[in-house]
Every structure is written in structure tokens, then in C-alpha cells.
Picture 1 (spheres, rainbow, N blue to C red):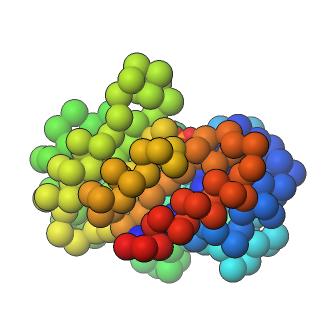
Picture 2: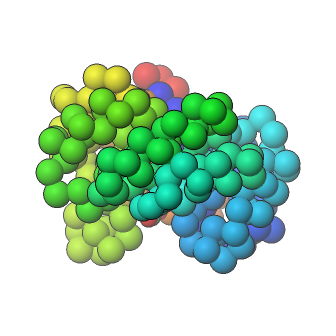
Length: 210
Ligand SMILES: O=C(CO)[C@H](O)[C@H](O)COP(=O)(O)O
């Protein structure tokens, strides 16, 4: 099981500062959608240059033009690029096709997908690398978690790796780990702590036991 740090509410220098603190304990660093909106794919490029041994995920949440956007993020140095599960099949297939050419990977974010079971089965057949259940900030504010959705995709996804994101804290991590995702994505559970290094270290220790 791997640990991904999600960075959302920082600029490029702020992102580098946090990764410097926790790089020993994370497998993947995510350049979150707000950073890409504020700073562009330059953020992906600079983080990859600063931390070449880490995989960088570009959280573009692609909804259209999957091939083109995967190409641009891959050229910037991303190893994994996100596409929305609510997108048209052609967008997801285009993203996968381009990722194969670029030797990068596609993660499908299932945020706002209504029928998780049915859509996860369909997407699993499209050759994506990860299927991620996600309770976004707006759902978190409404008290919605994606834990049940994780159990669903664990049941029906055979090919892709499974991931979970959204409000995961040290206190909820053991329950998440017990469900057996391949990848756990944590943002505020690390970045919101006074001692980010200690938080990341404790989380890495837990996910590494599996
Ligand atoms: O993609 C995101 C929001 O859309 C976040 O990166 C993701 O939810 C992880 O962050 P947190 O652990 O703070 O919820």
C-alpha cells in the first residue's frame, strides 16, 4: 500500500517546503487542482525537478480532451494524471491511449459518480491504472465520506489499482487500511498538522504494514 500527499492550498515555494519535510515518508506527491489553476503545469515541472525520485500526480480532474491534457501533463513531468469518472468514455479512453504513449498512468477520480458500482466496472474495462473514490471538500463539508464507496470498488474492480481520497486523518486511517486500497491519498491530514513530518511518518508506518 502506498501513501500520496495531496497539496492543494499552497503555491510552488510552499509546496516545495512541505515536500522537503515529508519526502522520506511519501511515495507520490499530488499537485492539487487549485495549484494547477493558480500556477499551471509549471508546478508539476518544478516539483518533479526538485524531487526527481518522487512520482508527481497532476490532479487535473480532466473532463474533456483527455489525450491532449494527459500529453501536456506528462510532458511537464507528471507520472499520474487524473480524469473524472463522470466524463464521457471517449475522454477516458483518449487519456489512457495517450498515457500509454507517454509511459504515464491514468487515475480516474470517481467524485460525484452516482452509481459507483456500475461505473467502476465500466471504467475498469477501459485499461485505467487507478480508480479512486473521493469525497471532495464540498462533500466533506456535508459530512459525506467515501469509505462505503471504497468497499464497493474493492468488490467489483479486478484490473485497476484502487485508491481513496478525502478527509483521511491519522484517526481514520486504520479503518481505511483495513479495506485494503492500493493507494491512500492524504492532504489536510498531513498539511494541517503542526508537525507534518511526524504525521507523515506515522501514516507511512501504518500503510507500510500492509
Ligand atoms: O482533490 C482534492 C480535493 O478535490 C484533495 O486533494 C483530496 O480531497 C485530498 O485532500 P484532503 O485529504 O485534504 O481531503
